Length: 305
Image 1: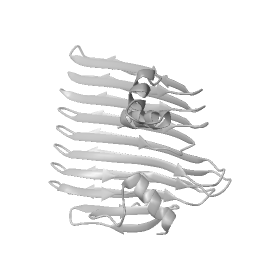
Image 2: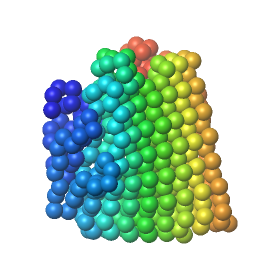
Image 3: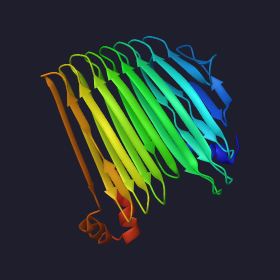
Image 4: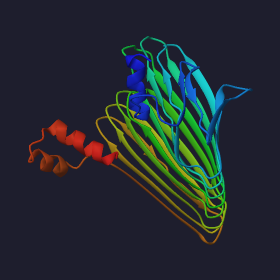
């Protein structure tokens, strides 16, 4: 690993060294390092690029890191990862992709992650995307996440785009069964001429299934964002969708939350808000000694937490 690799891993996975526990690091379409543990097995797929991550039932307090980094211009990387989170387990999964594009051609990563959260299992999933590089070539990331939560299961997805990505199309699909619970938190910032699209569909198919979706974004300069979160309640269930965005300069933001009830005891709520930074907030921080730019940055950082 060179200095660029280390910086990318720090940005997307908070890694300063080889992680404890299970991990699989992918660089420029190839395996760069791997370790399984007694309770978490990582295997290479035999039919297509990607890995299978198998968490044994009852595993608790363990983590698996699966970051992807790209440092070659012109690379088009595609990977399929499958996760089996064993019954009664409680684990952390840290993913994400960082692109350093030094040239004029596009660098692209498409990742398809398929999760099964077994009965009574709990998983926290963190996925961060980041782009940089002195080249003029685009940095493109298109993640797809598919989640099935069995009875009494719990999944928390933290989906973050932290800067430098020219184009992204994110797709999230989830099915939640009886007494299952899904929380999705999405945070995104775009600038320049960047484009970001996020589409979600959560199907609440079991009695007392529940979901909460919170999307927060900042759009600067001439960037464009589109959010389309949807929740369908097909049993007695609860769902809440919230989209909040700060718009600046000549940016454009569209938020289209949708809820659909197919059962009389489905309780579903959606809300969306788009606006600019309130002037009084900036003035208040400036009276505390911050410059206007520092005040603006502080507000945006707090909004995206």
